[in-house]
Image (cartoon, rainbow, N blue to C red; front, top):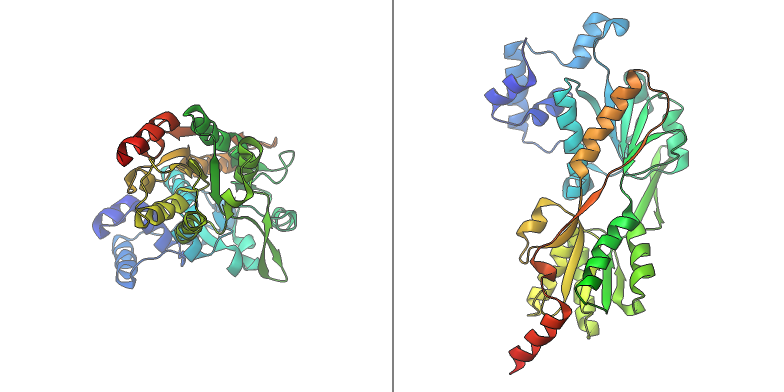
Length: 352
């Protein structure tokens, strides 16, 4: 029997790439030459996708469930956001290991109703409004929500406690002796479908809520834009031009923190001597930033894997909904490596 890994080895690409190409996932960013090479090798080896095997066997004779992944982000947004792309990576890895292949990769902005008819279940990535939740659950018996828990009495979900995780970062700064804290973050968005269109609205961001409740900052030290590296850069430049930087910042995503580091570097300001940083998400790039970032690690890949396991559990007959809250881990690196006292001493020595 020909396996995905046989095709991947011959085509010199990853297993997940082969799976997404053969299942016609057009959101995958891959060269046309690579896509055609994978298809040609699969045909040469006689491989058939799950969907083709299902059609050949008949609807009632299929051995494997057919699942879809619905992302609230556009393909470009997902590719640029390591947090959500890591969740998808976890889904793909678990599906491959379970020998279940994603038959549809759907983005809310290009949603088509007929897709539901081809699926046994769906994994939804991102926050969706109750209106969209009901639309999905009214058409599919089995749905799992990742990074959002619409109603734990009804739906399976996997996420984290954002407020508790944010407090890990804030408490760490207080423990080091920092008192005057600033915040840089984005806007949390909730998505829905209306008249076939994807609509977004801004909702409460639990990270910002936790910061405001714990740090009691000056209003000018709370800077909010979009969750992107570019916005992290812009907002830190704004903080610098305002003068009198906070002793430390809690930055609500690693991508924003990497942009903020660039702004500080351009202003000839040192981290953590001039201001310390703790960020959030724990993406791989945080370790290799110009100043390695102390960050709250969210186990995003495990969130994706758990979503697949939850869906399979439903297929096997579980009827009680499960709400899974995964822990987070504070990873300490150089970006807040000084205590406030050491920073003061370092500034004095640099002036003498």
